[in-house]
Length: 291
Image (cartoon, rainbow, N blue to C red; front, side):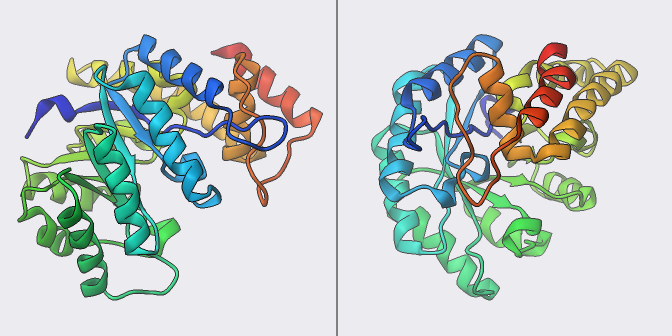
């Protein structure tokens, strides 16, 4: 396994201005902010980016902005997932032109495709570009739960270099890593990052990393030094913050926290909610002032 792929990767949020258009300046600020914290790279255009609420042009612009700021400084993973194979290939080609490290994709969803259709979808994408693929397993949102046996049908091909596992099935995570030690396994759920590390994860890709990546960098450092008690203490502090985010809506709350930190991230797109002044104040007291 390429150890350079291990580590902490914010799943970048997408900022919008007051008119609802992409705010590229704020996105550049966020990338710089996290590079200064020492993240290992970025997961670009995923669930946290509101990918499925963006136009094709907007998704391509996000890939481009991040590459312009971070290209050559860290690993960049472009999430190219779509229901349409053709669209996913188009995004993958953009990522290839921009010099991304790897691509990633959620399994095609909504239509309840069978595994052979899902498998062909992934292979068609990797056949179209010269970039490795990180599978994105997120059963709660996609409705597709890739099993260890199914993932083996990808990991027999060297172009499939890893998996982002956003699930509380840590037995599956352990099996991915035990059966395929040369593949990189990323923990998905931020609130269970330490659990993922304990079961063999090589790092994490998460949305709350946008504004508190240092906590997850610290958890991983402490874990690697076998300081489990100290690592759990930091995880519990991260979870206190995550609990506050959940109270008002995670996507909306994360963007508001970044606004309070001085970056103009605007609102999440409808049908996400617009936060009330009371909710914003709750986030300020419970999160922003405690960071």
